[in-house]
Amino acid sequence: MRKLLILALLPLLAFACKKSENIVVMETTKGVIELKLYDATPLHRDNFVKLVKEGAYDSLLFHRVIQDFMIQGGDPDSKNAAPGAPLGEGDRPYTVPAEFRLDQGIFHRRGVLAAAREGDDINPEQRSSAMQFYIVWGKIFDDEGIENVQKRLDDRTGGKVKLTPEMCEVYKTVGGTPHLDGQYTVFGEVISGLEVVDSIQRVPTDSLDRPVEDVRIIKAYLK
Image: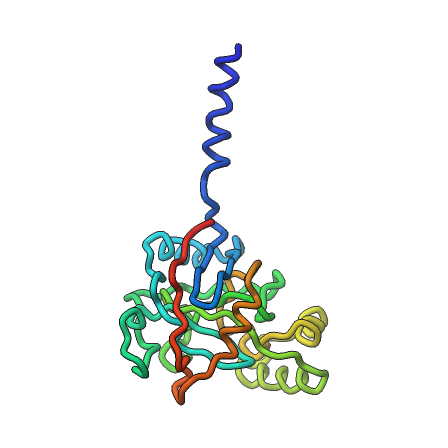
């Protein structure tokens, strides 16, 4: 009976030791960021996990940083980029279909992980970059600011994207980048290390928004 019990427990132990497919750790030169990937955006989740397993993000830079907006990384050309070299065009030869989930409460609040993409003029389906991502910092809005953002969204989306009272409250207390809602896919969030994101978004940058002193992803891996 004891032998059977031990054998029965083996699959459970194997499951317990299996790494999560939803938590990604990024060790950076500014500290450690932990990201939770959303099951509600499975195409982006699975793509990001695949790239992390391949080590695709190891040694890449946060090549575009804008204070009070976001930090962006994932350009494979940044791995060995010369100081001051322009970056942001590197990627893999595929895109990921958009997965907008505003109806599930997934929007551009501070600390979320989202996918960069090409502009609407050459990418009308708003498909995401294979590799490039950004983490939102943004700012806190007042009522007038929210009203102006909604007008901007109406112009950009033909009135298709509406900020709910719940979203507005988050933007007025936590902050974020509401003008990107319904246009760029959000697929995860920072669960630890938001202070690291803050420190990165504050670094000095050049005229191309590249940090003057490189901020690098040392290693990314599943927790």
